[in-house]
Image (tube, rainbow, N blue to C red; front, side, top):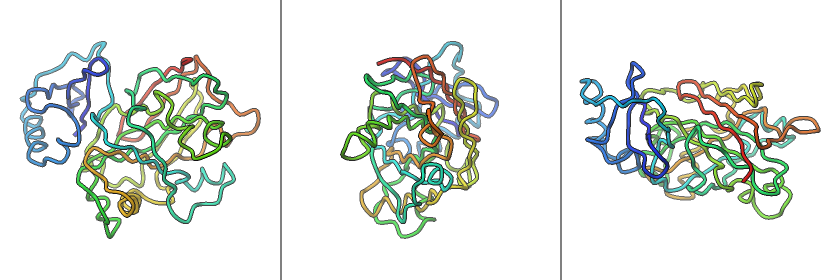
Length: 285
């Protein structure tokens, strides 16, 4: 299923995109697309049955804002340097274990909402990423297969980053990762059964119409199931938590000088095979 949330920011309603591309209203049978729903197999079954029966009301999609496809996100765990090609372009050694950092849930915006270049920023960068949405409580998992079994679905995540804040201002990476609007998510949460094997998905990103990133999740150093297993050794993952699984080569940081960092007026578009497409205009904060 392709689950999404539509409407004005803070007042989104749950919806579903059916097999024919028609937007359907879920608000009569579920309260929201969130961890509570994803952990409830019976509720998901009712959604699926209603969709299959054609019983869901049609929503007029014209002019409707698409919000982030997941409400009440608990935490966003991010995996750094998780693509072989990205490590090569930045001159970094591939990590022996996954690199973990966090984004605050309040960085999440809709897939087509504006993104704000922080005040004083000179190195705002782009990163298309596969987001993993947890559907079952995960703690001390013992295998990558078990990790995959705890995934409810997948979405596109734009892990916008400010490289000066991240690398040159001391401390951890978090200062360059948590600026407002720095995590567009969506348009859809696609359930794991529809995605199938997550290690062969194409990822692409364009800046002002120019292709910058053209990769595949086959380049991941630590695949999705292993990432979920590994993270569960250090923290409990709950339904509705998100893991951003890293970005392929092609970011501004990895390009020759002068590096083409983002400025107000730039337009970034990104897509992942089977997960839809995003478009953001960048503006000054």
